[in-house]
Amino acid sequence: MKKLPIVALIGQTNAGKSSLLNRLAHKNIAIVAREEGTTRDNVMARIDDRFLLIDTAGLKDPSDDFEAGIQDQISDAIESADLILLALDSSKYPDDKDKDIAKKALKSRKPVLLLLNKSDLGDSLDGAEFLRLGIKPDQTFRISATTGQGIKDLKSAILNNLDTPQRDATEYAPSTLKLALIGRPNVGKSSLFNTLGQKQQALVSSRQGTTRDVNRVEIKFHGRTLEILDTAGLRKPGKREVGIEKFSALRTLAAIEESDICALLVDATEPHSKLDQSLAGQIIEAGKGIIIVLTKSDLVDSTDHILDKLEQGFNFLPYAPVLITSSTTGQNVTKLFELATEIDTTRHLEVKTSELNKILSEAIVEHIPAGLKNTRPKPKYIVQTDTCPPWFVVHGRDLGLLHWSWKRFLERKIREKYPFVGTPIFFSFRNDDKSHQDEKRA
Image (cartoon, rainbow, N blue to C red):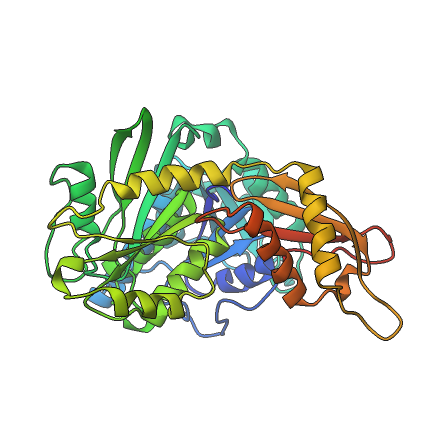
């Protein structure tokens, strides 16, 4: 659940990129159509919790501002990626546009894999026709996003390229705690960023969307290095403008993946929105620590009613601390550092197996799991298998029958003894009976 590497899928229009994303994701995420240019925005999918795959719009000449904005998205996807997949229609001879795309990809100095899609068709060309693109034959894969041909080998190649020593660069060292400031536009992220960094590194403006990139600053706090990431504000997808704002959203999502803890900023002068809840959901899904930060508290008479609304709106995050701040007055600003380090400690907490099984036994006695008429799920024992975020595995029989409410009940029982402040915890339920398939994340 650390930072997931990013894989960018690029190529000309109608090369089958969206179909490939859907094939790798095992579900329909991107719209697929015969018409060229169906994909207008970057579409992102988490693939087997191993990497993020970005499906970009087809590269073509930026004939107008609209097209130029789309090409900017693609350039940013290439810049943000750890690996680039160049998809071509194997039934068409590579043209000058394909050469330009390959040159752009290779110039990034990122690993590049060439995908000859639609290889199941009878008019597929010989691989020698594509050597002029400059990509080595051992980095070229014949695939079919429609039939699944070559997909298994492609996925293995992707994972092998992402597991290179480059992934262990010093910027990902666990000694540095990464805190990302996340939120809607104009909630005060850059002001808080500047106050935290004690210098005007980011441009502060009342105009929405000032921050287009991810700004960073490192500070020392009680001997610990903290890296603060200031991100662009995210609006609802339908309200995002084409161009710069589109790929700013991509970088914000990448910052969530990179960070250890996210501070979700909520404007005290405006009620929280469904977008705030959506952002919180993305943070939790990524397995990151979370702090809800109420900004601009100096502009309201009282925060009591706002806190009540936050409690209702974020009732699915009872473990997330709420911090009331003001960048203008400096209220509770340094408290954010204290909370971040505290949450980081809880994310590394390892609970003894004996303690966990005591909690499990108490939970079973207090609330016997319900089942079917003649079959009842029987949890036997529980172990912790991972940290950051904490992950627990429950073993037993017929656990597929466990109701979601009992799983939540077990989580509450664990948090009563070990609060795990500011961090999600995950569960897997595995049957000892081999005839049953494992139940994955609760």
